[in-house]
Length: 183
Image (cartoon, rainbow, N blue to C red):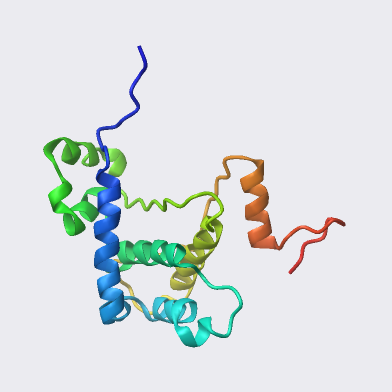
């Protein structure tokens, strides 16, 4: 008999992602999003997504990458989530069936966890880079003590050599045939 790996979440995380994106997009469009984040985050968001800067660059984040970045920043800085349960309570309380409530109330979900679901080749590494820069710069240039925590320390785990090589290329520059890295 096959063992079911369904954790009981069914399509709830996808519904949560849609509701979160709807809230984030509304606040982004009406300007309240950028007012609620740190000055460092404001500068990064303007640089990454403002037309004045985007028009001068050849390569910019595409819509899916932008959404992933905004959603993560929103959950961390604006919602100030402390757990997976708190994210659902603030965004999608209607999705918390008794079974799912018990599931996300488990100790292993007592820390904020952000998941970015993007297809192969859609630029997850660039999203990762942006989120690392956001965390690092906020930690380095923290102006006042707040309940929002940022970090300068990261651990990246690559699930295979291909992903490892892509991460190296992203952080050190693309490796050339002679073994040097393009800067």
